[in-house]
Image (tube, rainbow, N blue to C red; front, side):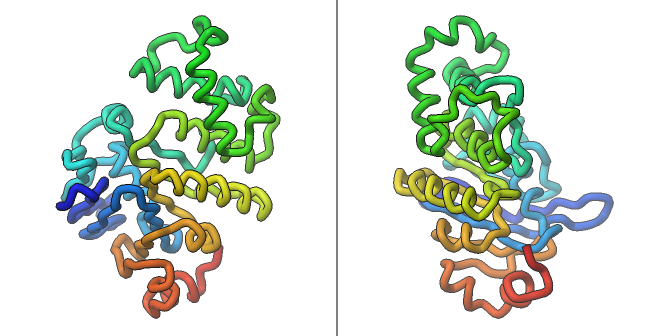
Length: 255
C-alpha cells in the first residue's frame, strides 16, 4: 500500500440475520481526495461507514487508516485518531447557540475527552472561539452564531454539523448524506462550502444520492449495489458505465 492511501478497506463482509449487507468490499481512499460512494437504498453504504468508524464490527476483513489497522478499535479511539463522521440526521445541541455547538467539539478535541466540562470559562477560550468562528465562516454560518440551533432551518442545521466536524481538524472526514433534506439553494451553498474545503486538501468520503453534489465534488466514485462494489472510477467514467446506469443512475431508483 502506498503512503498516499489514507483509508484502505479490504475484503470486508457484514451480515445481519443471515442477510449480506456487505460482501467482499475493497476500497481505497487517496490522501487529499474526495471519494464518493453511491448506490440505491439498502446497498450497504451507511453500513460500510459504520464499519469504518467502529460502530459495527465486520464479519471478515480489515479497515486500515494511515497504515494502522483500526478494525476492533472503539468508535472513540478511531475518532481520536482523526476520523470524523457527520451523520445523515443532524446531531446537534438544540438548546445551545450555533457558536456554542461548534465550541464544544473544538474543546473536546483539544482536551481529548468529553468528560471535561466545556462550559468552564468558555468565554475566555479565545483560541477555541477563533477556531469555532472560522469553521462557521467556512459553512457560511458566522452571521448566525448567536442563534439558538433549534430555530435554524434544516439546511443550516446540516451545515452546522459540518462545522462541528470541521473544527475537529479531521484527517479523514466522512459525510453521510450531507445535503439530505436541503432545498436546492441550500444544496448549492453546501456544495460551494465543500468545494472550498476540497481546495484545502482535506480527505473526504461522501455518501450522497444527489448526483449534482457527487459530480461537483468527487475525484473518484465507488458504486455499491447489494453490498458489493460494482463499478469504480472518475465521474466521467461512472456517468458512462452501463452497469451503473442500470443499477442506479438510469434505473428505477430515483432520489
